[in-house]
Image (cartoon, rainbow, N blue to C red; front, side, top):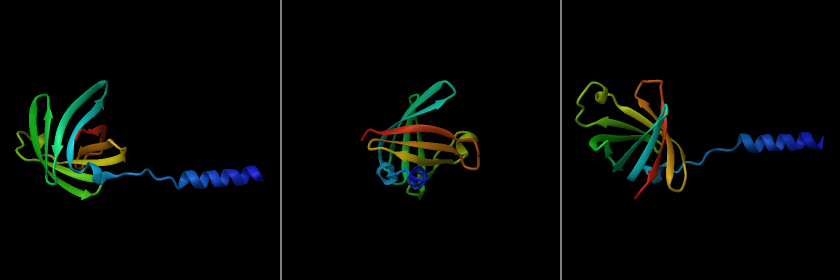
Amino acid sequence: MRSIFLCIVLFMFVSCYEVERNCKDYQIGTFKSEIKINDSIYTSEFIRTNNLQIETYNNKVDSSEVRWINDCEVVFKTINPKNRIERKDIHLKILTTTDSSYTFEYSYVGDKTKQKGIAKKID
């Protein structure tokens, strides 16, 4: 009987656990991100303000408008798209946060395929 009670209490404790996300801490600042696709790791650095993100990847600079949907989800719209792919907006969702980084998933708006990555706050 005692073990059944312990299992019920343990189940209630685990099922009530919610991942803490302090997304507002990562809406503005300077970041370095890493995304693993297949066996390759892609690294970029970016600066994000309230309404703009400037990203450097492979010595190329790209700027996007930033529109926060809620504290943890944002949509990026490329300012000067050079091709059809760059015209697609990107949806990013912060999944978890730590004191210096966040884990995220992103995709083109409307696509079901999502990629995951980690961004570390530099400043």
